[in-house]
Amino acid sequence: MRFQLRPSNDSFFDHFSRAAENLVKGTALLSELILPDADVQSVSERLVEVEHDSDAITHELYKRINSSFITPFDREDIYRLGSGLDDVMDHLEAVGSLLYLYGLTKIPVLPREMHEMVDVLDRQAKVTAEAMPKLRTMRDLEDYFVECNRLENEGDRVYRMLLVRLFSGEYDALTVLKLKEVVEELERACDAFERVANTVETVAVKES
Image (cartoon, rainbow, N blue to C red; front, side, top):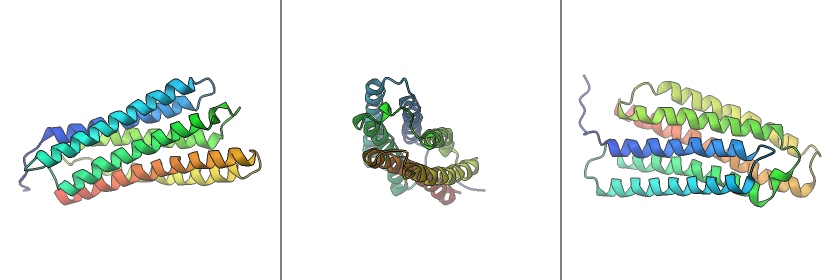
């Protein structure tokens, strides 16, 4: 029988859940932003607001760690998880800002693979948000690790195809440079989601 040596502090888990729910909002806004008839400025501004909210959640989490004598699991893992969730949001916001500032949404048709990449991120966000409440019990998390890894592999495949598309001659050189910067942020966001899953897996193993 495993004894619970640390008291549960629901405030930490609430922070993780709120941060993950913001990622779902972020990917939903990205999905909206790349539509042909999107109100680009409005959607981009809303994405910045969500990113600011995520920053506030992260700061609240750090303050909670520093003011708590006992934490539900290792402090360094709490920092790593909170920081990882915030990193994902930073990459999502960067994608939205670059699309808006570079005027890329004015392109008649964005690469199909870009839509696919945003869809992968949206699915990663949803499985992450579903997993965060399970940290309270550290149970039923294995499917999350497996699915997030599978999605990251799918994202890598789409990323490679997207690079091929960019250098196919379909776009002028300046547009390629702009799009490539966006594509790199999409790929970083996909990788950041996997790092969050890896952190959760590490915590689950330690607490098992």
